[in-house]
Image (tube, rainbow, N blue to C red; front, side, top):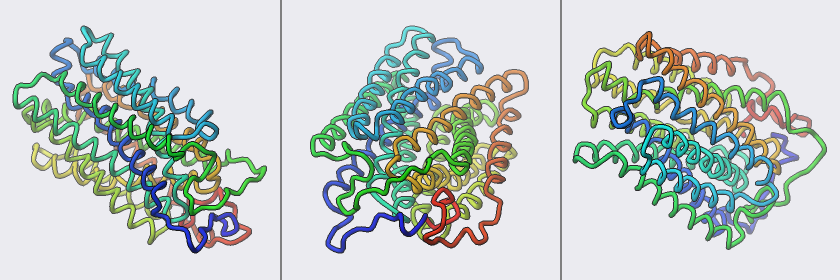
Length: 421
């Protein structure tokens, strides 16, 4: 990023002022709540299949329905967030997610469950994209990537808590529908915090909202660059692999490796615990290496761990591989998102919408494709699609950064991936 375009804080300003702290808390709780709603379904897949007599191909429609709702929510953020503000959209998204979870809890048939997942996805598109854009507004430079990883760690911990809770409920004889009631209540609580933030003026303006930051630079240069296209392709491949493996991990452990339902649900939590730890570590690593270097190593190691997970002979070794996979997947998406917005922070909402929508496209196509392949070929074979996606993604970042590592007044900020953001 060009030094002339950085947002420089006045010496007297504090980056930990109440406004950014409240905005960060609202963003983190929104991400946690959406993750809990997103991952209650993969952890419940076995029970959902039994309740609705659903095949693997039918279960594959659930993440597709969610992503079909998610994309319009994301694109709405891209159109209005930079004008109306992020916090109000976060509140609306959380409320819609809560409504969708309630509808799923009382769904009488599989078609109604699909419609409920569509609503959960639309609400999540609003809340997740607005939350990521708000974090980008609150912080600048290397701190942006660090805090993006921290906020996404809360998403990961929501993905941990949800399957663990489902596994505990199933082992205790509680009906699987109770999980949707719980995540609906969590979404409503997140919406209340977002409304408090909006009432205090947090996330209601255009561009950076950190009081420590000056006015964002504006110019006529287009923010639709080849670098943004690379971020979008990377997001599609990453989310396709992440959601693809997450959707089917419990079924893999239960049907292919003989784990009981509670252990299978816990395996999904273990993967997302790895993601959370990886994102916390990524927050520190982002201050010590370039975004490209972080992405290159994380994706290469994730590819190896994904292959190890599919080659492992038993559930215990599979759980270890799932944790390692999550550990190296963790920093990828937050780093992509932060690097994409660093060049044009005043268009954070629109840029984040492109990146997240691209991820949603991958999340809509690849998990369902795995389900279609799994019915005739077996789930273990179908999940090698995830290995291919991660390997292709790693290939995007193999070009040596070279002289692009240096930044100066003449450097194009669209190449922010090559610099310490």
